[in-house]
Image (tube, rainbow, N blue to C red):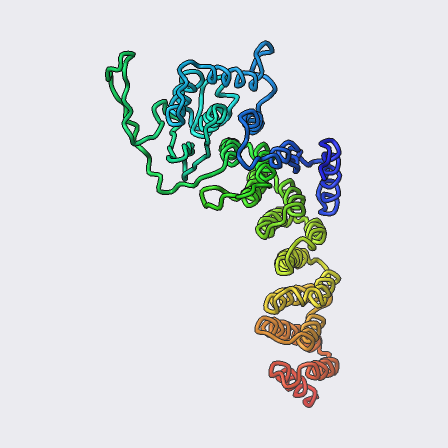
Length: 500
């Protein structure tokens, strides 16, 4: 069922806004997107393809539509493009020199259109209206124009394409004759044509060499006209006008949607696959311009309407670029919001990859920002959370936790002393397990604590508080049984007490 243009536009706008809200993106910054509906006329032309070929009038209408032609030639006083072609057809059909036989008619048509319309070759000039207004042409536009004139005088014409060229073939019943429409002498290339004066005398000849047609594919009249759209798309994308190419790709799909015997050839791009490529090209152009948010909106919108397995890779790339930008700006919450809003559109593996990226960045930021023991406990809680454990590799978890524990030990040492720092690290080792870094720091803390205890003992001893020094060192040895430095202090104070 076809939508009217204004209704469809409103639907697209609403859908884009909804997706923007869901994705956590700023809807008001969205750039306008190309419409995602083919011209209704394309479906009309697709359904009217006759079994025995189009009439020349239908070909005129179809080719001007494919060319994107307006109602009239430039200038308000000019006749319509369709009118110009109707007059030319009438002139051709009424020409006194028009031969009777198909082969001669075919050659006559080629000479007629070169004399009347075709002035100069231009590789990208694929539009019929531009031929009529400017005289420039390429292989496709000249082939389509030839087909119109040939059909108008009853010739059986079909298209032919190679990897980089298009022309036509005339079927005379007994012969199939190629016509190189870009050359005024291109009828039946490879054969010499003789020229005679009015009295029958030979005045000269011309020879147009045949191309290497090894890679050639016969295409229908409709498929030949569709090459106008193909060339227009290519030309637009070559000029980075990807947004204008999208509607033409949609029109090509619609135009070729009802073909009875669609050509199956690598030389003729599959319309649906070709459409996906052009939809992605527009998204890529946005991303390349630094508009990843717009590109993601586009990908999310188009993937729903035109599913393709390649969209997942494209969306992954866009999400990765957006998340990297957010994380570099330390906008971790925004990164989580973006991922959570689009998780259902990503594969489970990609969700895990992005979750790991954000979580790791968040933890690095949190650990680097530790200022208090409360910060330490908060980060340790995150590292012990079931979600974190399920995402973060065990080795990375241990690495980050060790950093946090060492930081916590340093904070406690500064705030509460070496005793509190030692207890903290010992408890951590019991809870999480040991490693070289924790053991090394614990040893350093113990050494510092022993030095602290020794210095306190010396202070008491020097003040001749021998009983106090003795009690203190006994308690110190309970904390560090067998420590040789503290044991030496004990021996010293006991000797002094005995002498008394």
